[in-house]
Length: 236
Image (cartoon, rainbow, N blue to C red; front, top):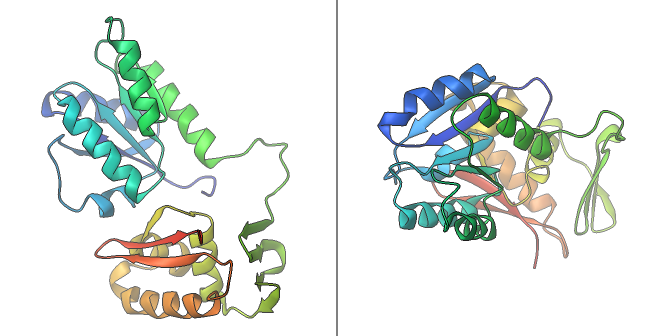
């Protein structure tokens, strides 16, 4: 994720806490959207348009939280945080272990406020930035597919393949989000810098061209997630 881009967080919480949570994370520099614990519609589309997901245990049945976490992890590898309501209870340690084993990245026992926002900022930095003194990541390699950013070159199964500028942009966007759901909205924003309504068919055409060009042994594949977007998967 590029520095300076808008940082987006999805809050999954009850009505009684949504205002306080939203105000707190927005005060920390995030753009917040909020849904209730029982929400089920268009989940893939929602998670594809955010950078972090934050669950609040209050008003959230444990079974529903576990189920929703599993469903999200099947679709993407976004950072997920949970606010644990009673971190000092005898069962809290075992619950934290369950959360972490399910794929939740951090469990917070702090109240809504500055510490919570600081932990979310740390989670975002771990996921999307590199140390200032780290070398630029110029080469992206997935199996037998290699992309060299500084030279805008693509090597497919040992052979250099020409990609038109927009095809290259689509490929780079997908490779940098390996295993994650990428919405058409995100592709429109990053590759075309236009509204999704203008370029939907164009995106589909370019995805098809990219698929054809990387259709070689050892290369990842781009799968369509119906009504959501696309995901690049490694070849098993």
